[in-house]
Amino acid sequence: MVARPEPAVTPDEPLEDTIRRIVREEVERAFRRDPASRRLCLIASKGTLDWAYPPFILGSAAAAAGMEAAIFFTFYGLNLLRKDFDRTLAVSPVGNPAMPMPVPMPDIVTALPGMKALATGMMKGLFRQKGVASVRELRDVCLESGVRLIACTMTMEVFGYTADDFVPGVEFGGAGAFLSEARRSHVTLFV
Amino acid sequence: MAVPVEDSSLDCRGLLCPMPVVRCSREMKRLRPGQVLKLLATDRGAVTDIPAWAADTGNELLHWQEDGPVLVFYLRKGDDV
Image 1 (tube, rainbow over the protein chains, first blue to last red):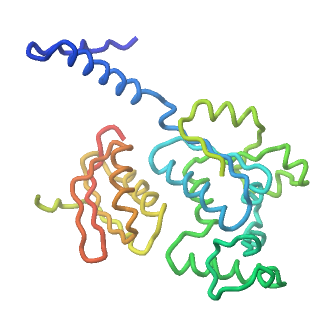
Image 2 (cartoon, chains in turn yellow, purple):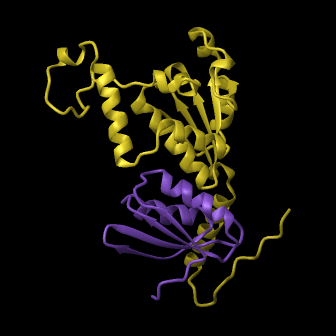
Image 3 (cartoon, each protein chain N blue to C red):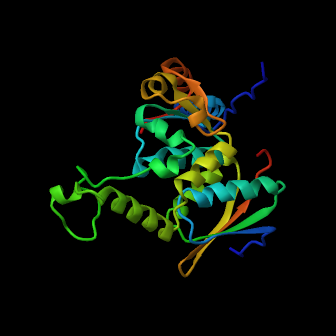
């Protein structure tokens, strides 16, 4: 048990203000000690080029801020852990009316062969030109800075992935592992 | 306020989120407590990201300024980081 300094009572301060101040100081002290305020736990469920960014950006930024970070990859998110994901990461304009296009085009045109490759190439080029780190760089930063990357074993089984498909350093777990982390983390997001 | 004198300098011009914070964190690990890092960035988000990062990690933002399009931050490494 660590000795705690007695709250200072100032003679001129009204009693109610003193109580409010002490409560506020105690809450602030408790919050600073709360390890959950230094933990982040994400679910990454999407495996397209655009949705690859948020989990790796938040994970690397959390690690840079001294937080313990864990990202659970499930369903299509498993794609982001693959060794060869540079080949498989893509983005499609089909069904995404918010995607900026160089020229307006009818929905049916966005579904033509080659449009996915075109959109993917454009997004990668634009991101590089603007100075955004690549998904591979961001994933490397996460791995180097101790972000735990955890693959959902249930969806691995369903999709036929093995541990060898994934980059070294990936851990394996299920809903129980996620919940055990998440209940100790103030920051949890489903991406 | 007088512009602080830096012990180390880091150029993050042209880099976007989260790389300025990631590089800043890495560079700060190399410094000793009390030493000052000068960081250059052009990502406008750094105006909020860098002060927030400093507050969360126990480092001190001494001063920041805009030199044209470049944001310049001076950060002093905290004692217990």
